[in-house]
Length: 188
Image 1: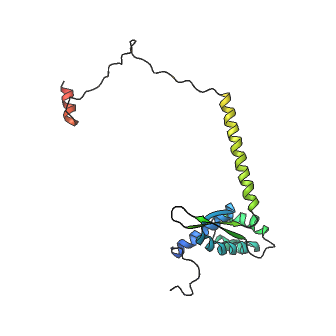
Image 2: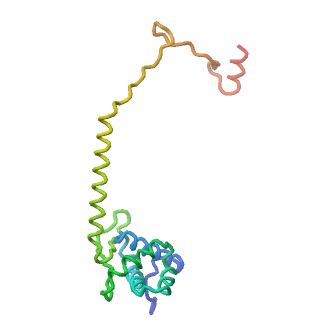
Image 3: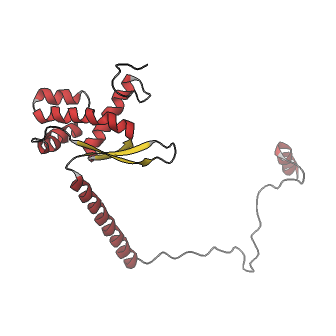
């Protein structure tokens, strides 16, 4: 029985579990929203919220403490300079878990974990990606109209009457294969 055992093991060793939570938290802080299983999302939520609370303090010791768990300095920088100041007047509840359906392959319960208050950022990123695709397609269609397609060259004929050219090389004797065939053809 698992009496007094707090947290989910997620079928991983402690080191693997720590690495998993660290990577999930880094992706959450970088992208502001991630898709994962419900069990991982429930484990990630308190882990990430403790890091945000520590980042709100903003001093060097807090930065070093967060760097123990997050190894990407760019993510730590964005956490301290971008994410933590937005939650300055908030006392917790920095993340939100949205339940999705089951995954097709193994029927695992899926969820979205997102930072509260960054919903507009995701919409802006989606609009920017759509406009970038539209510009790219317009650029391609403009380029296609300016450049004509290259012409295909017809194959050259070796003889004038349409007969194929004589093949050169060794021919195999009927019924012979391998080294014997090579010997027979060289004898002829």
